[in-house]
Length: 117
Length: 117
DNA sequence: CCGAATCCGTGTCGATACTG
DNA sequence: CAGTATCGACACGGATTCGG
Image 1 (cartoon, rainbow over the protein chains, first blue to last red):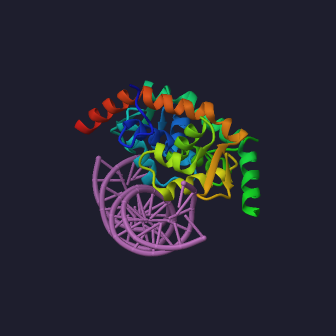
Image 2 (cartoon, rainbow over the protein chains, first blue to last red):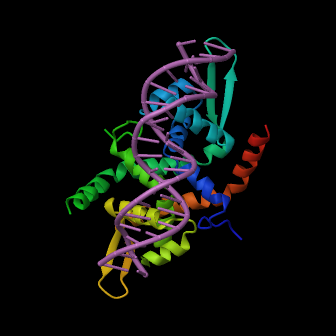
Image 3 (cartoon, rainbow over the protein chains, first blue to last red):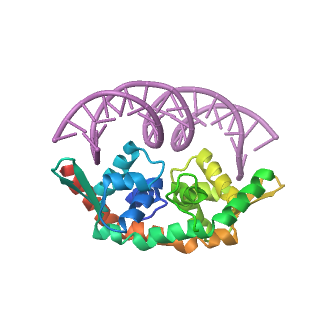
């Protein structure tokens, strides 16, 4: 039987949670361009704290979606890149991004209507 | 210019957040089958609290993804259904579900490797 | 200098109990 | 049946500090 996302204890829930994570999607989208340094990720994603960026990257690394490479140099340098598994997510997250941008106006209109009610 | 999901104050961030919401995805997937009552949603989604189900449905309604219909009867009856906008999300969330189920094994393997490290 | 770890205020989540 | 109210626990986020 297929994993069931509606079941409480099915791991597929946790997988969905990671995909759904607000920061994970943005990190994956940027890493789609290629290997990036920690600092570049921090700059590109406005509003993310160092703590959450580190935590997000750790989670993605743990789930096998990104690799983390530490270069022993001064100044220190840490590179992140997508794994094959991570790249298999690209179409999906790119779809999310384009849906969000394409339907933003409709959603905002619906919100105005709801709030004015 | 297109909305930029990386910008802090762009509404597309909020749209992404709703799509990414752990419960929203599950609710939308079930409503894909057709109109559902509050109670049926609560039963189908294991582990969701009444509070979060209500909150999730309100959010989806506010964003114009779901309609809420109250029937003045005893016992009360409230129906939820997807709007056209909500249906436009179906392919995407179905894709998320299938990715999660299809790659669950790989993710769990990666986690074991990481945790054993 | 860049990246990670720590402390702490705050908001959000979940469980339980209660109401129209 | 379909919510609302309340409260404790936990996770988030910011600022600061540490470490290579």
